[in-house]
Length: 355
Image (cartoon, rainbow, N blue to C red):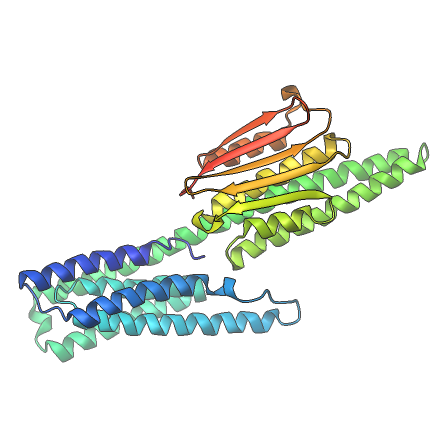
């Protein structure tokens, strides 16, 4: 899902109020049918267009190049449809506020095609406005209102591109943190396990072999972590599917209920990282006992529980991994509890609507 997905509905709502007021108060001629229908269609196209990649199947390594081309084509079609709808709404709006919707075009183009194309779309949109002014108002260059509108559009264009740049940078930083947290944890484990295998190679071959096998498993999990983080950049993050992949082959039972689509991707990913750390600790300290993961995404909050029936876990043994979980969950406004009585129970609660 594209960052700042609320921007288009917000701008459309503002234009709806402004155009509706202008039409009802007689301050401008608002053509109601194309105006309202165009705004509703614009919001629907933006929402469906930002989520469209999730509707298809995942590309394999062989056809990934064709999938990228197909995604670009779909993004181009969505952008063209949005441009047509913005033009319709702008000419049907009696207040003139609908011109602000043209800023959605370079903003969307930035995330679909990059900075260069976004700047090109922005310049092309400005040229279109100049031509439209010239055709509809031949003396527009002597109108303070039209000139100021064009200048404000230029300022808005710069701000929109800057907002897109900041949003993209924040998303890259988030993904980089995810890769660092997951990959760094597993690579550290691989290093320690290989060192252990080297030390026990002459003393106890069985221990050395087990250490190598554990290192191989940690490397596999590291690779899966990288795939999960990269996948989150290309398509909406799905908690239930990711947990199923994480638990696959480990003998961990996973049960997910509720509607996770109500939650922001950052919140779902924080829950996934908490579950990952809980499973890792359970496999490490529970002595091979049963491990269960339950998640419920309710209307107001989501609750994750990772439990095992091992010997328990004392608070004094809390390591950097659990501290990292507390920090990550804290960033999305949640809480973490660890109960180490009869077995270990990690409980994470996060509110809906966090980023």
